[in-house]
Structure formats: structure tokens, C-alpha cells
Length: 305
Ligand code: FAD
Image (cartoon, rainbow, N blue to C red; front, side, top):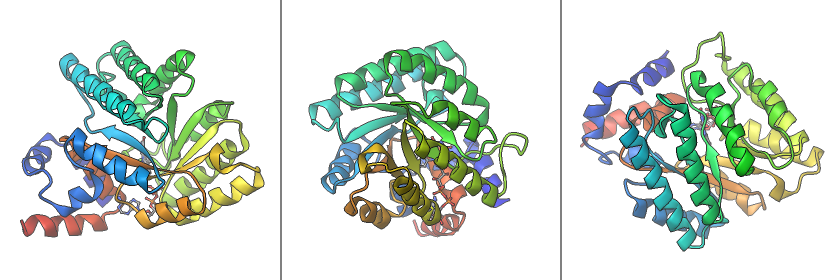
């Protein structure tokens, strides 16, 4: 119930306006978001890569409704990729892109074109792009765009959300040579007609998807903080004789940082998803929805400011 309420609030402009007027006043916000500027992102990327972790950078912003705004978002990614290239970080830092920030909500061709320009900039920087998966209503459009981009950029990553009933089928279609697939549980509200709503069912679906991806010929990117699923991932890697560089674990900045370092110290590839920018509200609300206990800490920190 609380999860649903937080996810509904994540789409509320009213709540957003109130909270975003005081950016970064809360330790809770700072825990999950690297900062507001490209310099903040560069600093955190330097720290994490210095510790042997990989990074994927997300410029916050989503659900864009105007062409001008989609262009600004695209330019921001291109500038970020130029910075990654100039710093020689292309092999350690990539970018994660939300197509809804590129115009997908009102013009799929525009979103494709903007994503194409970002992929081009990523190639020049010696790195890759992963397209985040958003609301369940956008899955078909996002997969269409991924297939078109992969004609010219075969290394574009795609995300599969295990809570969707079609997830296992999509994993089977995407487990081919060279295909980079991030598997996550899924962070948005979705009705039971299309998604598993019971946590156990979602976890079981995650395991089924992971089995398909780890047995396949692609490059699985296992995005979870769940200790049980991380253990099963390790067992599947042994079962399928996968080298450490043939898959990676992914976790969010601010969540289980010690576990990120523990896995990396064991020789695993671990990529940290680092979000930054001024439009932190919907991303932050999804982090609260994943663990409603966070809400208590957040309310306390707001009361104390
Ligand atoms: P959970 O069962 O939610 O959590 C397992 C444990 O992790 C918890 O017990 C707790 O210890 C810790 N934990 C998890 N979340 C939190 C939190 N917010 N605060 C504190 N502790 C926490 N979702 C999408 O829908 N689309 C995407 O493109 C997408 N990309 C992602 C990329 C990465 C790298 C990661 C790690 C996640 C991504 N997600 C995405 C979010 C994902 O779908 C889940 O909502 C999120 O990862 C929580 O699920 P979990 O697997 O960690 O399991």
C-alpha cells in the first residue's frame, strides 16, 4: 500500500514542486544522488573507479514533454560523454539513458534520433549506453528503439524488469552473442495484468530470467542488492563456467556500498549506477518506495532542517 502511494506521489507535480525547492537539504537525498552538477558526477565517478568499481551515469530527468527539453537532455549527455572521453574513463564509465527524457512520450522517432546521437558520442568516448526501462506502457517502444539502435551500435544495453510477466520471454529473445542485458526487479507501479505484484513471485521470475541470461551467449548485467539473488548469480556463473569478465553485478549509488566493494575485492565486475542532476524527485521517490523505512528517515531529516 505504502509502496503504491509513494509511486503515485513520484508522479505528482505538486509534491515535486515542494520538495525540489530545497534540493540537497536532506541527507537522505544526498545518500542516493551524487549531486546536482556534472562536476559532482565527475568527482563521484573518480572516487568509485579509483576503488576498482565500474560506473553507469544517469543524468536525472524523465517524462519530458517538450522538444526543446528533450534536446537539452540530449546535449547534457553528449557533454557528459565528452568529459568521460577526455578523462580517459571510457572503459570504466558508461551512461544510462531514459528514453522518456529524449521525447519518447510524444515522439518515438525523436527519441530514437536523440538516443542515436548519444550512442554516437559514447562510441567517440570509447564507452557504451544502456537504455533504462521505465513504465510498462513504454516497453514495446523501448525494445523497438533498442533493436533499431543495435543495427549500428550492437553494444547498446537493454533492461528487462523481472516483475513483468513477459520478462522471461524477452530474456530468451535477448540472450544472443554480444547482447548486453541488465536484469532488475522493476521500480514502477504496474497492474497485475502485466506484472507480478507479489514479492516472492518477482524474486522467482528474477531467478528464471537470470538462468536464461547466464546460460545464454550475451553479457548479463545483474542489477540487484538482494543477497539471495546475488548468491544464486554466483552459483550460476560457476555452473555455466562464466569468466568474471563475461557478466557484471550492478547496484545503485548509496545502497549496500560495502557489498559492492566485497564483490569487487573477490574479482567480480561491479558497476554502480550514479544519478545526478536537479530533477531528483521521481528517482528519489522510487528509492523510498523500494524501502518504505527510508521514508521515516527522510521525514525526520526534513523536520530537522
Ligand atoms: P529488493 O528486494 O528491493 O531489495 C533487496 C535489499 O536491498 C533490501 O533488503 C535492502 O537491503 C536493499 N535495498 C534495496 N533497495 C533499497 C533502497 N531503496 N534503500 C535502501 N536499501 C535498499 N528499475 C527499473 O524499473 N528500470 C531500470 O532501468 C532500472 N535500472 C536499475 C539499474 C541498477 C544498476 C539497479 C541496481 C536497479 C535498477 N532498477 C531499475 C531498480 C530495480 O528495479 C529495483 O527497484 C531496485 O534495485 C530494488 O530491488 P532489489 O533487486 O535490490 O531488491
